[in-house]
Every structure is written in structure tokens, then in C-alpha cells.
Length: 377
Image (cartoon, rainbow, N blue to C red; front, side, top):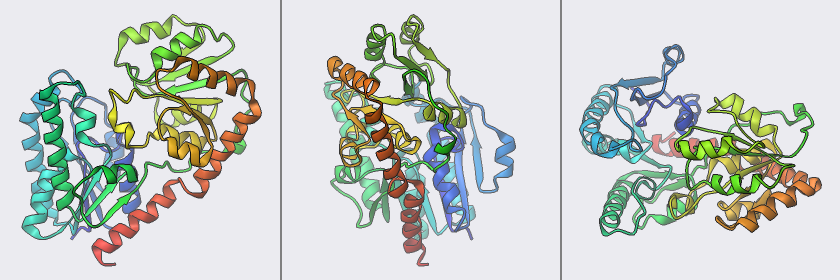
């Protein structure tokens, strides 16, 4: 019998599934594990790697993602097929604990819990309604978001343990189980600051999708005036018009969509990371924690952001600004450009906090405690 089956609605071993992959690689060190994922065919999958991973099994059915055109509607056809596949595998392997990594996979996992009296973990990265339902002030969208939130809260309350990435997300659930734990998306320490070369010039770094609502339009306007500052940009292009604006500015360099190792190399070779989110469009960041903040801490790099305010205040690792306040953002960029010692202080503070408290090793301990309790070990 398998101890744990983890379920996610994507291939798991790819950049957008860092959390699921990280959890899997941790629990497989201590328990017998099988992870079930879905290869929808929109991104290449390294099958040589999959064949070497005895703990991973993929459902092969090409299907859209929710963010694609009419993706949510089209998925109504595909998800029941995926759920049947999940349930068949759960019945086949009979895990003691099933770990559902998103709302899209919880239904068959909950059914398995009821029928076989097994334990269920519901892992919530973002509140689904806030992330995938439009925030437009419209009665239809308001009803849809309320409905999705109620469904999510129902499953959360019926699970044996609710896991989220922050205490704020836990508090956002009105109904929840007795056992709740915040396991942040802290990265593994995969860098050596001793090897870092002296960085010339003054480099800002933006990582993430090229799209509206992430402050890129603001940065484009600022960089056209700040000739002594370079902005390095990397990520998938989801707004070609915005990408064209980037290409017009000489001191903005787009490096494409990079794999994990090349991304870390960029992060450790910049002076400041910038992580800005329009919370009117992306309300999940009111409660969640952007990976960029934690990665800046790991890499020993100062950060300018409008989220994770309590963490920034606690660790003193960067400057908090208000989204849309151009003068506020410009002042922060210039302040860190003209004060290398302050930059170094923020970088050192962030790195120290990462080593002491905000690394994956600390989160792994919480994960093991959760599983030990459920498995009575």
C-alpha cells in the first residue's frame, strides 16, 4: 500500500508547478509516494526525466488551461474524464493519505476519502475564486466568485488538514478544519553567494509573465528617463503590445522565458528585484505570498514591492511602495541606485532571514509533522 498520493492538474515537474514538485521530492524521502499529474500538451514534458521518476504518473489528454480563450468553458468537458482517471488510480493504489494540490483535483479525492475512510489534505496555493474569476464589478462575476469560494470552503472544511502558503489565506476561510498549517513556497537554498562576481552598473530585474497589472508599463515609463539604470526582463509573453513597448527602450533587455537554473543566475546577478501587482486585478496577492519576494531573500538581493508588507517590515529586506504611485516607485529605484550600502543591508537582512526562518528545510519540517500526525507515525 502507498502512504501518499499527491494530485495536481498539470504535469508537476515544470516551472509553474514548483510547489507540487517540491512537496513531492520532500515526502518521497520519508514515505511511499505516487504523484498524479495531467499533461495537457501545451508545454513540452521531459519524458526521459519522468521515466526515471518512479513516483510520477501522468494523464495523457490534450486539453486547454483556464487562462486560454474559452478555456474555463471547454474544461467542463475534460475535467470529468480527468477526475475518473484520478479516482481509478486512487482505488488501485489505496493511499492512506491523498494530497489534493488544487480545487481542480479535490472532488475525486474527497469521494475517495468518503468511500474508503482515508485522510485528505487540501493544499490551497491561492483562493481559486480570486485568481480565476474576473474581479469586474458585475453581479454575474460576484455570484460566480461567491459560489466558487463556497465550494472551496466546503472541501476545506471536510478535509483532515488544510495547507496554505500563508496565515492570511487560512484566515480568509470562514469554515475550515481543526488542523491548518501554513507552508510557504520557500525555495531550496540552491546558490552560493561566495561565488557571486562584482556586478557592474545598476540592474533591476523583473521576472514573470509579460502582461498588464504587473507594473511593467510603469517601469517602461521610468526606464526611458533613468538612462543609468538597466531593467532585465524575463518571462512568458502574454501581451505582445506590452512586449513591443519593452523592445523600444534601449536600457530594457528581454531575456525570454528561462529555465530554473538560468533564472537563478539572473536573480543572483542583479542589484534589485521588482515585484509589483495590481491588487484590483490579482486579489490573491492580498492574502498570498509571491515567490519573487522569497527568492530575492534567498539570492541576497534587495526588493521593491507592494505586497508581503509584513514580511518586508519584519526582515527589512527591501522597500514597500504603492502600486500605481509612479513617484513612489521612482524614488525607491533611485534611492537604492544611489545608496549601495543600503542595498547591501537589505540584501544581507533578506539572506539572513531566509537562512534562519524562510527556507524550504523549515517548511519541510512542518510538512513531515503534518504527515506523521495523519499517518500516526
